[in-house]
Amino acid sequence: IWLENDMEMHIEVRNGDQVWNEDGALCDWTLQLTGQQTPLRPGSLSLDAPVPNPFNPSTTLAYTLPVDGFVSLDLFNIQGALVRELVAQTLPAGRHSVIVDGSALASGLYLARLQTAQGVRSTRLLLLK
Image 1 (tube, rainbow, N blue to C red):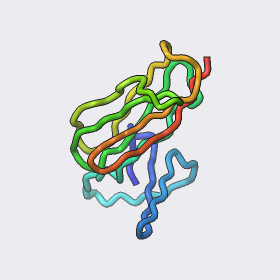
Image 2: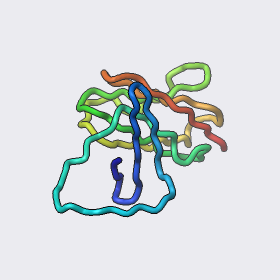
Image 3: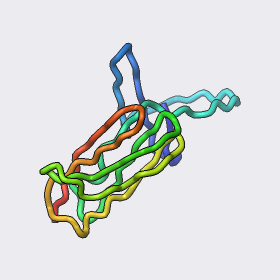
Image 4: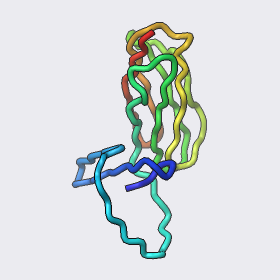
């Protein structure tokens, strides 16, 4: 479990090779604080669904990096052509986000692809004008 911006809770459950993720679940929680601080560890490599989606003119892509390293986050059109390089740099482990500005793009379905040394993740974006 980890918190983002002190408002959003993200939960990841692992069972062997299976991983379940849940973001923004509505539920009641009872917390008992121990007074001990434990650093929050980033979860596994993940790329969240864009918010909002469909979008016009912009949306936000959030992702989690389990370790420091080089990150490539690219946007492709439905034909597989690279439309835009969103991120291409070394980043620390943790939660990150990038805003996708679609004001100069045509309406349609796009694919965002996150690549790191830990793997590849992708998600679909729908731009409606």
